Length: 424
Image (cartoon, rainbow, N blue to C red; front, side):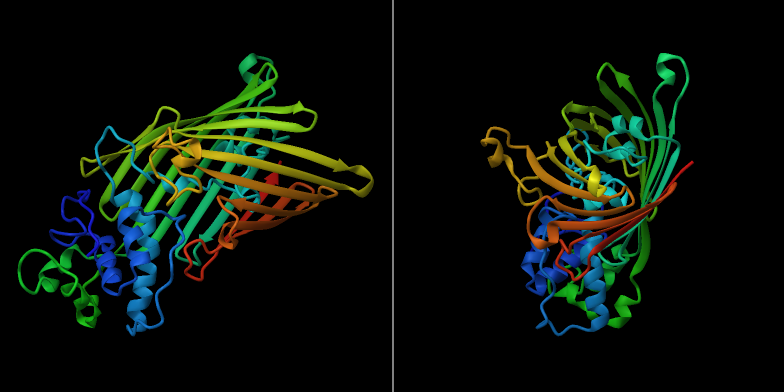
């Protein structure tokens, strides 16, 4: 049986013992009983929306309605894992806390494999590198909608940037306001099913008893709730000598059913355009002071800092009306996620930093007469599920972009992102 000794934030259950809590615990047991260990074990041990999982076996002769529930539960469990689990102590970093913000906003960046820290030059720079807000030529709004893993997760992003044209030192920069919203509907909660499933009355729902979920009568007793995660960001950027500098203050609100959390964080960004010829370099310091999320249950989560240095280079061919931008970035984590989740574990750093792991992002953008765009990227790996691509079209002050990301969960569902931008 798969177990996890960590306490539930609801004070009700663990995977291995105690009363049954959220759907995450029961679904892990169900998957373990179905002998889909490659799915169930990571679900309990290292939940992440970036891990490559394996789909349900066709040999498991379960009702299609339950398989649909199980399939949805896998993705929901991954999304909620950072919210519901791993609250080790108020002083330690919580892996995957605040993960709903990780992919930022805008289809352009996603099409380039998220290698955007040195490219950022539009309203989405508020997330990717706030220093890049200075390169927005005029007021701009970007709105994005993304459906992750099919239609299981809805994610929206809106950002507005306003260049400042005043005479004072602080009036010659740019400010921006952004919102990230993620929602997962119809999340099954099972805390009310303990008495129905615990046939022997020992207070533990074991692997055999959990199969009673196949009973339609018990399935009808499952309660469905909604996970909503929201981040409001206020950003400012200005020049400092030859460098562009920027910062973002983040206000984070998460809710799952009747439980909620609140936190405040700070990101910083540096950017140097044309540092050498057409080479741009930048770095984003995310959650630089660590970000604390306080839950209504009395538990706290800590989002540890992330450092993302990057570079990009531009080639222009005026006679052909062609421009090419190649970019790269290295996202470095310090929360002990390891190479089960990230592309490179601490071994890639010489084994000296146990808590350090990282992902390499690479991207290319080709534009034709600054109107049509084609993009490709690699997001933390070179296997097919880690590859991204995108297209864009710009007409006067209006721009629309589309991006596609692979099936990293191996559930036959990809991620699609569409964004529109307007200059005015």
